[in-house]
Image: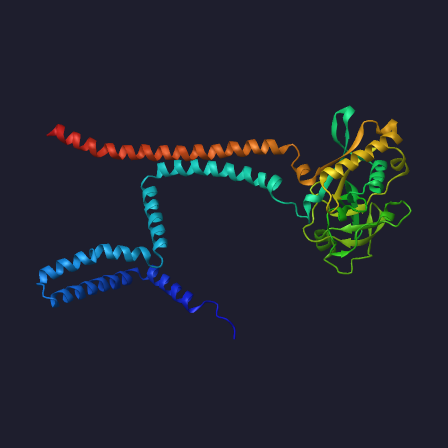
Length: 399
């Protein structure tokens, strides 16, 4: 037998609440009748004990504590009393504000300014610093840059040879990948359109722990120029440009006037902070010069720290690998080293101190706004107190 949505006790409480709020006049009449009936019973009981009616009435009222007092005690504990009190406060506040529209406009504008400023700054603060990134175990994701101490460059782009060495040597990182944003020409139905896209290496989606909705991600072999060209669509592109066709996999699409085979569709809502507007992902295909020369720095990097490995351990290993590459390639890697930065911190960049200062400033603004409104209320109250005194003074003078 299915359980009822509300128990009998809950249903009874709900009915009592509705009755107390909707049929307030009837409830008050019932309360008045009940209290007076009880008072009459007390009087009758004391008369039966031999007291005269007047004395019985007096003692019954003393014992009861007053009719009005009993009613008030019952009102305070019955269902809906708090809601009724709040509603009365709201009605009183509305009446007071309607009597003084100029004062109301100034007070509301002052509070609205403070609240608006706080809301705007906190929205940015929450998005950049507080809200967790939409990836599994996002605290393990790091951005990879090259720091050049001799050039006082803390975060520089990465070269392909250094990345390939990091990917082969780093044991504390489970996935290491590069990316670069670009514009791609996609031809469909004979019409070409420029769309935002990104070139990424194998391991990019693995570093973010993103599983495709359809198909697969990129493979290392697809970074070679001799391999067939493949592409991965975002969910939004799949729905909007290809009508959500479930047979999209292995379909050929012209990208930059070359055939690319669709091998995957990303999950709905996927975005990478530094390539947020991308509709299409294709593999990075390193040229011979990019693989040979370490002086060509043009990529951003992302990686995931292995489970059980701390960021300090990963950074220590990256320093060891950088020293090794510096000894092997002194001309190009002198003073260069890999830098690992938590992705959340990278997203905040240099905004954290500024946002903290702004948050403190707007908090002070709301305090000032509240103080100003409080001063207005005090001034208004003092004027009300002086008006009766002024009337009495004028009356005394005329007299």
